[in-house]
Image 1 (tube, protein in one colour):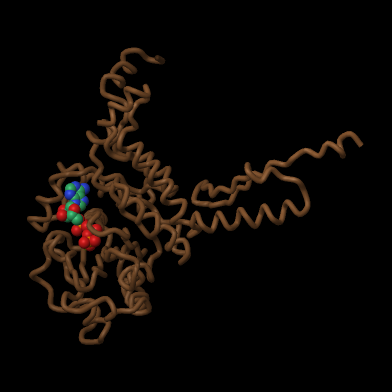
Image 2 (image 1 turned 120 degrees about the vertical axis):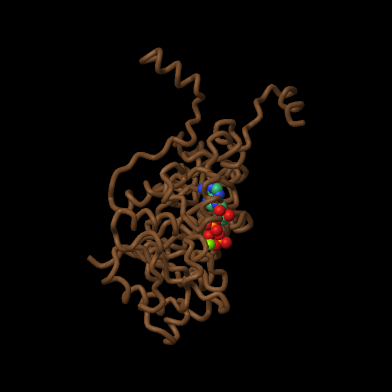
Length: 90
Length: 266
Ligand SMILES: Nc1ncnc2c1ncn2[C@@H]1O[C@H](COP(=O)(O)OP(=O)(O)OP(=O)(O)O)[C@@H](O)[C@H]1O
Ligand SMILES: [Mg+2]
């Protein structure tokens, strides 16, 4: 079944063990922190609001992600700034 | 030295807690250490039949807690190993008959007379689990290489950390080398990467476990059982020995390994 698609796309099927591992990692990120994707969306909106009061940012490219390393969770925000031409020339 | 209390727990049911408790108890006692296995799964008692001691029960854990007998009267001596004992769970009561404080008091009463107290926890994260971990000095979390079992183990690891009973150590049970090799079962490295805890045991799927439970004679007594060997290794690691893990899920194929042998450095 899936090999039909993998032949079309030229991609190898992930083994079921690899699939299990990826699914586990994703499910555990949310189990461990109890932060739902909806909460992340709210955080993102509020962070954009606060930061853009002080600096120009590219709102569409802002990313807020939960990451894990050795059972420690952190929120990682990637907030692209829009360069201010005035300041550079001045 | 007073006993070390080791609780074996899992979150998910049926992954091998009772089997591990009986086998680790047997392995420690076979080495001449004084062991008591304590069944904390009140209402679903099983450790007695796995150890083959079901016909000797007079009193149980709840009888002790409620003062119907003295602790010594509920201690059942094993048939084969003079240093092995069992305190059975009550079968007709439920977990609310015992509290975490009761368990701590009971363990403290046992500590001076034993080297190890091994507690068989019930599945779940409620009262029975709380009872089982309350007196623990060390917590062993057992799981199978399956998504749901690993997920539940992760939840337990978090709870153990929160209770400051950690760091918990992991037993990975029912590993099938053939399935790992063809990519259809999570391997040891995968599970350890996901859970990020120390491994203390790696136990293969083994028919001898079923035969052993039919007979009421834990596989650790059987020199030919692979799982029995794995449980004996866990007992040695509990004693601080550095024992290499069985190679159950070598992901490289036989021919690849052979090629490495005949072509050193390649
Ligand atoms: N390594 C193994 N190889 C083969 N069978 C096994 C192995 N470990 C456990 N089993 C089998 O799995 C079943 C469940 O084991 P066990 O009763 O020890 O689990 P448990 O975690 O105590 O379950 P519960 O949550 O119901 O208390 C039993 O039938 C047992 O014989
Ligand atoms: Mg059990």
